[in-house]
Amino acid sequence: MKEFSECCEFLQSRTIITPRVAFILGSGLGSLLEQVEIDATIPYREIPHFPVSTVEGHAGNLIFGTLCEVPVAIMQGRFHYYEGYSMQQIAFPVRVLKLLGVECLFLANATGGLNPAYKTGDIVLIGDHINLQFDNPLRGKNGEEFGVRFPDMSRAYDEELILFAQKSAQKRNIVLHSGVYVACCGPSLETPAEYRMFRLLGGDVVGMSSVPEVIAARHAGMRCCALAAVTNESSTAQQGVETSFHTVQENAQKALPNMTAIFTDILMELKIGS
Ligand code: HPA
Image (cartoon, rainbow, N blue to C red; front, side, top):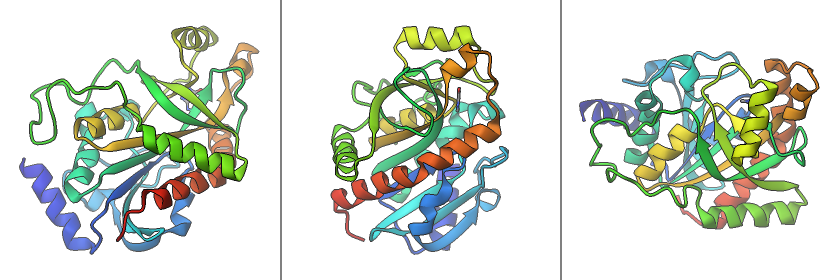
């Protein structure tokens, strides 16, 4: 489609990097960037056909560079369904990344902990998800150039990348839970009854992102690995204590160094040359 080729041509004219791995970083999770040798930082608003991020705390840049000698693209700031974007708009950058050469997609997000064993600041390796956004980026005419009409989702999160993440956590003595991510529309946080329901449904954490991107990425054959920072515990809501966006951001920061370490360890295990 014309939108994709115009977008790719523009990006290729702005960077010498052919990215093999991409990162989508959410609320306050941008500091992985400190380790990247940056070639180009391109504001979303300059990129043809890109949606523009509207959430406070989400910088809107697409960054190209190298991390651990691997050519990477980093989405600093993501697009959420609650901002009013369609699922297709949320999937657009993922598909562009695929066309640019990305094979692996790493996602970081902030979540509410449903599993009572999870504490604020913990990290959860997402092993599966439940899509309660009740929409799908693949709805409508199938993009045959990306993938099949009915893509399999039995292994949405790549088994080898999961093993690399677990190995990294073990080596570094990081507590890394494995859990099921429940995706909701937001932007309101859950009521105590909703948190209880999501736990009953089989969820370990709840958030407002990532699932549309993972569905689009899997459709296009990309390998996915997602880490969730537990920024608040649902038990807090059960006790009638409020959770603020500020708290969510602050607690995401706590998990950040360990998330960055795990992602970079996985990258090194992947042994992708530049
Ligand atoms: N619910 C949904 N999304 C979230 C939460 C939560 O409790 N915390 C951070 N993102």
